[in-house]
Image (cartoon, rainbow, N blue to C red):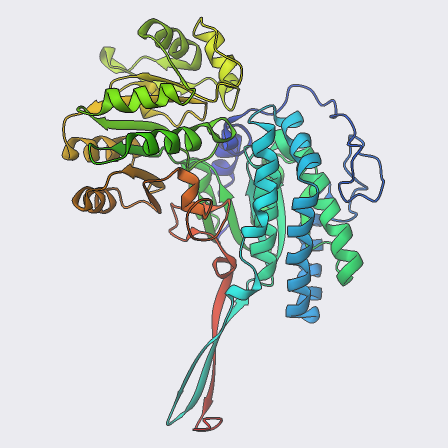
Length: 497
């Protein structure tokens, strides 16, 4: 393995800590109130330190966390597939039973998103695939039999976001351990406490049932140094990283295989063959989910000119609020910092992190307006170059841009998506439109006539994962993502037909 580029790590880990999930580390170290409901801790107090250090997965030192995970991986190898099945069952059951407590813990710590959706994201961990996905392939012929099996790497080093902290690590544990691996988490600092509480609870339950204590370890106080140490540790054989281009580049330069879930800015195209009522409801459902924190969420809409007014009317009728031009300008000034470009160019817009994942009422206040209680989303008409179109803004506001043709709609969508190949959405009953957009954008998820979450089996068909590897091409992660294929060949024997 080549050495980690220390300068690059130091330069970009700030992105892991600051950009990942879009929120900075908390300004205070004061702990959230202790949880009174059962969250799997056997009645132990939720102090500021989420558990005894080095006990049940929670470690102060990254190297110790990696070493403990390696030992647990070896124990899991001996325990066999039955132990993997048991781990998956425990994580899925606990995620659902503790959804309300853990969802509130995460919201209290991160201050972003919606409680009802924090809870729901934990309850649906049961949709993440497990050991059943690892069926071997066999080839039999005149010269014997060959068996190909999916086998584990060992220890996976994972970086998790603040946007979906406990759901992401829970889904990752299911996928990674179903494949026979152990995992070390370097969580986002803004969601490290709730993540450690969940990891400790999972390990306590797994230890009781299997005797394996540290199948998922976590670094208690994550930092740039702990990230670098995790990447370099010899026990870590593969990386699972979520973040922007910088952290993806750093992971790829460690010399280890990296599964990278990068940024997204999903466009929506709506044409005149779509059902406007259905399209409006789907767009609202996806763009408002958890205050638009989902990386797959609808971020901008390109509507065919002939139906744009009808679409916006349907959106207004479904309880979302349209901003005037003056209100849009006020919100834009509050939500973005514009850095002037060279020679008087348009420059670059940076998202104000104070608005990420906040409730619509916060955005409305910045726009100088009041909105009805329970409003899920704001929207306004913009041009294609507006900061809300160009940037992955992760807040409950949706820009809508008129286009004159399918060709322009596809071209604008491709431009806004930035070649991330993450997610794109279309509302149309025209097969040519569906085909043309699908081919042009070439995204990992392509959703037709539904909300974004249908791409992960929520309202559509398929399975769930909170790690979608777009830059490195693995797509929606599953247990096979964390395996390598081994071939076992028997020559001239064992063929019984």
